[in-house]
Length: 366
Image 1 (spheres, rainbow, N blue to C red):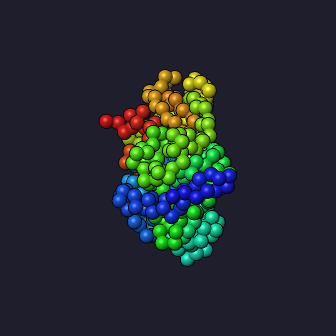
Image 2 (image 1 turned 90 degrees about the vertical axis):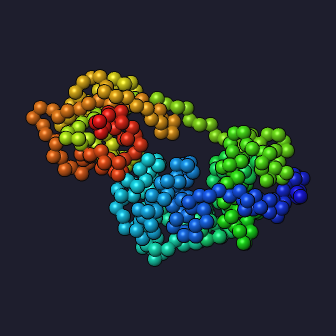
Image 3 (image 1 turned 60 degrees about the vertical axis):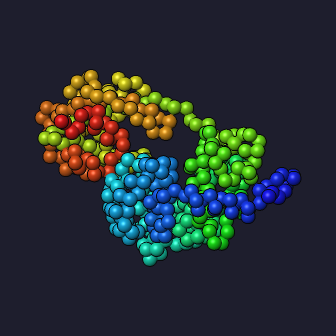
């Protein structure tokens, strides 16, 4: 059944569409660690982790994170470095820092319990419009539309919403249609069902339209152009960056320094330097490690690696480093540098890049 909107455009009626969606969800919903959970804290953690990270990558890390920090007060009490260590490898570390700051705010201002009001949630660190709406909907059953990438894609196709994903006008249209589907009894399930549909059937490329419960109501399917909705912004062109990293080892320990800038702030990394060319990066690294009492053993790298961060493609050369004459850094206790044994490195607050450099350097030695 459809109704006519402005300009005579046929719009699927929310009632039948909702029933088809929920009937499919009741049969096909995925078994996920955060599915069926009623604890708002656990739902909040899952939603933050799932931002810009795949379900498969999040599954094991979600359970490990809740084992380490089982409730909101335990997260609030933790040291920032401990939170970053548990987040290590998930990327986008501002998420972890905001999660920690928000937990402390909730303890201080709300007695340790997440508020269920979207406006109040938005006042907390890291709670943008989507996270606030998702927590209110999924954790508290509030009739608040929440549209991440999957929900946006499904609704853009079902209602043939014009425009580019991420623009204010497109976002407003998506949320308007999302709100029309929510009912009082199962608002959270409607949101979860749209997410599941987008992740399993209404995928970005080659959607599985024959298996879609909303196919009969989908305007994009009727037009034979589901993949054209929504329009997507052009990705930034990839940029190749040369990175030189220094590997200094003593007694089975490797020297790392703490990053104090950029999105990796607070994490441990090997001393490194960037350049437009591999040689330029090596020369900058040679200068950068002098204050640490180090020099490069050779001008030839001992290992190589590659890493991608958004549109930055890092070509990494790893150089062996040794102590300069008359310098000793073996007992350094400076807060900005630390010697790590291999087991400690596995549990430390280090990004994936640091682990790749360690493997390229052959650390730990066999």
